[in-house]
Amino acid sequence: MLNLLLFLLTKKMKKPSLEELAADIQGGNEQLLNTVINDYKPFVKKTVSSVCKRYIYESDDEFSIGLIAFNDAILKYNQDRGSSILSFAEVIIKRKVIDFIRKNGKYQDISMDRNLIEDDTDSSSLSVEQVVSVEEFEKQQEIEKRREEIVDFQEHLSEYSLSFNDLVEQSPKHEDARLNAIEIAKRVVTSNELMSYLKEKKRLPIKKLEKQVNVSRKTIERNRKYIIAISLIMSGDYMYLKDYLKGRLDK
Image 1: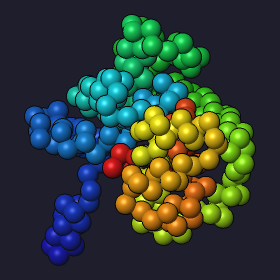
Image 2: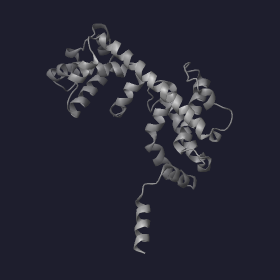
Image 3: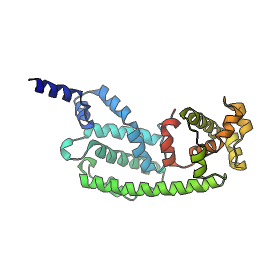
Image 4: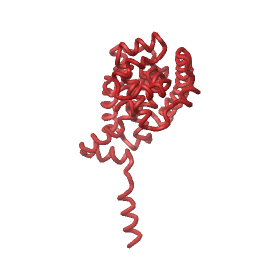
C-alpha cells in the first residue's frame, strides 16, 4: 500500500509532457493553452527566424503567424501519428509562415526544402522520417549560415580596428556592467545622429553619449569596444548573434 502511495505521489509531482498538456488543452482547458503558448514563445521565435533568415521580434507579423500556427498545432496534434508535438508544430509553423511570406512577397531566399514543408497534403500526415529529414537539412543550413555570419561580422569589426580577441579581452566581467553597456548600445542604435557618427568616424561618439546616458565617461571608454560590437550586431543583419542577446535585447 505504501509503495502504491509513493508511486502515485511521484507521478502526481512529475512535470507533465507537452503531449499531455496538449491532450488536456484539447479537452477544453483554455487557460492552460494560453500558458503553454506563452512558455513556448522562444521556440516559436526561433522556428520563424529560421524561415525568415533573420532575427524575429515579437512585434513582427511573422511572429504572430507563428503563434497562431503553434496554437493550431496544439489543437490538431494527434499522438497516434508517432511524431513529437514539437516536431509537428515546427512543420506547421514553417508552412504557415512560408505561406504568409509568399502571399506578401516579403522574401526571396526561402530554404530549398520548402517543397517538403509546403506539400499539399495535411501537415499532420508527415512521417517522422520526413520531419527528421527536414530538421537535419536545416541543421546543416544553420551551421553554414552561422559560419558565414561570423566571418561577415569579423570583417565588419575590422573596419573599426576591432577583433574577436579584443571583445574577449575587453568584455565587461560583471553582468551589471554588460547590461549597462548593452543599454548604451541601444541608445546608439536608436539615435540616427549617434549611429551616423559611429559609421562615419568608425569610433564611438563618447562626448555625445556622455550627455545622454547616466554613465560616467570613464565607464563608457572602458567598455568602448564592447559597446561598438553590440551596436554593430543590433544594427546589422546578424540573426544568430542577436539570438545570443535576445533575452537582454527584449528587456
